[in-house]
Image (tube, rainbow, N blue to C red; front, side, top):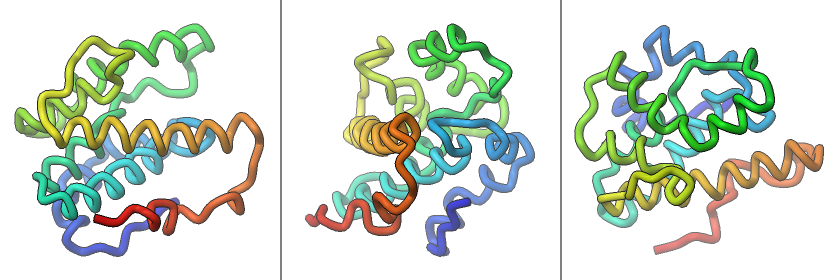
Length: 165
């Protein structure tokens, strides 16, 4: 389990991370880890980059944390999982709106995070940022899972160290 020791970040996302519905993502597999861990990685890395770029890092943290927040889990067959690749942004948006008050930017971050595989365009720099961070992290997770490479390949605490602004 990934733990973020950043009080400001944790305060921004607390209402999400403390909800029972969000806690269910801990038990759903996503690229060989829990969906909660994937969401947290994308959210925290996007948040840090957004701060350095002087973007709306609060909306980035929240929107990224909810970008894959839908509660379909491991009971899905291979065909359903494949189809979800293309439709899950809508599922995540509907689920997010059901449980949380989200702003327009957070909505766009969620619905457009799979662009160009999903038809919704990113309207904000923040949406593009989360889209790209999700691709990098998701790619690393899939690489690790499908090649059966252990955690020693990289240290998540330092994966973005070469990025400087």
